[in-house]
Length: 156
Image 1 (tube, one colour):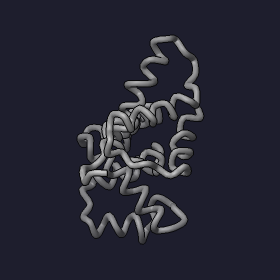
Image 2 (tube, helix red, strand yellow):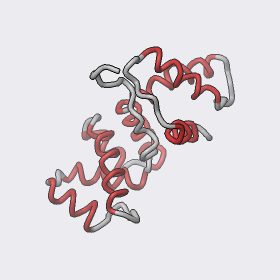
Image 3 (cartoon, helix red, strand yellow):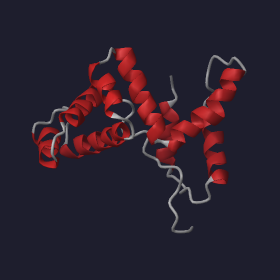
């Protein structure tokens, strides 16, 4: 395997959309907190109400990276919008942040929509992952547990 980075990362399962927590993270970003204030809020004050500091840091970091891929106007929608608006805003941020998610929607879900399918067969994810390796030779081979976690995201 070469030293080039992969187009695809295995981080979409780490935080799902986590709307309530995303609202808090968006608020912190809009408040322009410093790194020290961020750490205090996430780790010391435990504003996300996680059982461990490690979980809080991982989830906050993922939500922050997703949100920072967008502009502050979207952060306001996440923080202040209705549940539907905030969910759509976070979904847009997740798609922009994750090439894996964006490509799955573009390449697999779009075809299902065009065929008027009412469901997403579980095998679509496995087929998609196989095709990802063809599109990106630098994509790592994920452990089975990672593949299962990703596949379970689509159990709607």
